[in-house]
Length: 179
Image (cartoon, rainbow, N blue to C red; front, side, top):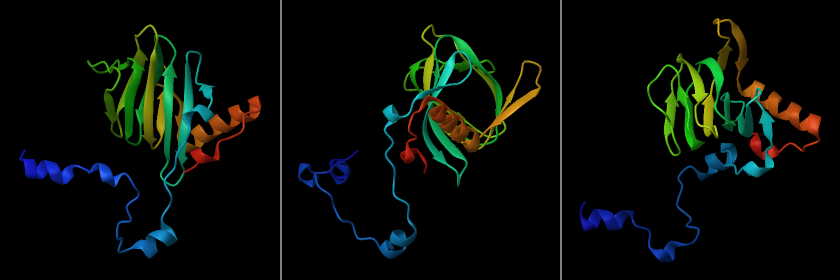
């Protein structure tokens, strides 16, 4: 890479300020745009998800059937066989996880990208389990060990999961999470 191309991408230290960039569609963005969001994850409780797991909900986007959360399998264990009806992106934060159907193991910093129609079984063999950040679009269908359908999990399920737990435990709901 030449020195010229390097300097074009480098922001000078004096640019540590808000820069008003000309926007040809500023009026349209003002009328129809949606502000970005900040969600303090510490304001979201760990909500039980089976006997050995919990979910820290981070965001709900009902217009696009998207939920974001951190899934915590607390020790070695299994989430179960499920099929994705949308795209799922996960990043391993701690521990490790794998799918029984594949030969890889995800560790801290690794990316898992799942496409619609895939069926697999999420497990953690790590003694301290795993924490996975997830951006989940579309429904996830869960099945038992005999391939019998159990439940569909989508943005509405995640909202109900979060809100029911908060109501039952007197925890205020975080309006930042509703995109």
